[in-house]
Length: 189
Image (cartoon, rainbow, N blue to C red):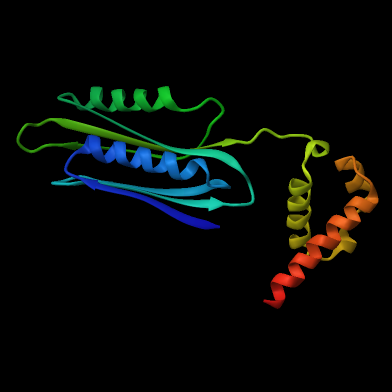
């Protein structure tokens, strides 16, 4: 598991939302894993402070994102609905929403209301047949299974695994041998 944080503080709500959206888009694009949970913090005053902390699970891979939108006006209900509609129009098809938050702020002098909506999502990677796995993907999956069983290869049904990946039993034995060598080399360090 890995924690990452996106933070913005600005006197401009528009700038804060824009900077957070850009930072999350750039950093999440190439980050492996999926978002397991998140914590969203919105605070208003002389400065807007917007913070999104994500817990990334490296075991499952997905496209992930953080959407942030705002709107402003005099009618609080209209402003909230407009901000929600902006986010709804940007949520990718097939996205699983991990978390969301919405908050409003009304300026003391002008009585202008701002609404900010933040939504965190994953788009699960499409399942592909095990027979289409690359060598590296096959070994990563085998390594994760072996890790769960304390690297004991006797718990595996080699024939069934070979059939599943559409490879020979020798290929699976060689994969396991390489995984165990790698684990042994890492433990000696």
